[in-house]
Length: 366
Image (tube, rainbow, N blue to C red; front, side):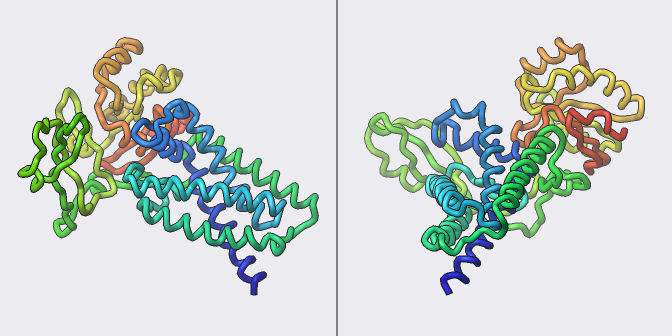
């Protein structure tokens, strides 16, 4: 019986780690954005790790895949199970912290393929911890499936293939796009809220400084404010989240005017997505002039979408001599559209027809 439970745990944990790792390896830049949140000043306050989040993300997702393979084939079982245990303890701590303190809304455990709430992620990690502890206390039943030479080849192959996949998706596009902005999606439709959709329940929260400390009060608490309390700010706190459309933060502004619907109604549109102009690939930005002329000659409206400030936009226009439209959009939304900076999106009446990385500019089908 013990052997059966151990082998089931081995299969369950190994397959889940491989699936979870491969989904994140499909989009390691997206996972690095989640690590940015954990390292930020509002969560763990370790911003010195932020420049290395992509490297850390790649290491973690490749480690997930490889440990899953190692467990399934029984490679160095003691080392493998100890590594799995330490890794899942780390993940459990992170998901509990996210859930309890309500900081990181989605841990990115399964990338954009499956969104879990922090408490769902924590529950998933508790289940994983349970099965890994079974493996930990029954290591003698985790035997290798093949001879040492074949085991070594399988592990090295899994490392090599994972590294190749990581390199490819960082320098091109994810092999599978799970985001709401995938090719074929209509942005206008994805922004719509059905008439019968559940509404959010929002509570007004007032922040007052009491004895030098910012303290939150609800509207009914205002009648009993402590003496000397000083008003600081007011915010809306979501008690119950209503229906949130797949795309809810896509807004294009030109000179502070909302041009979203106008642009989404155009028959031919080429959008250059550069969430941060100062970090955009310079070689790709230099090629935009010729691309712009080619696209306009074929009837396209061309614009750059960016989350950069007006000052940075002005400096970019001056640097490259471009006079086409620079539309402001929330940087988080732009990172969701595509990970490359810049990337290129072709639209037809709001429907995404093609997306390419700046390394694949020549593949644009105008």
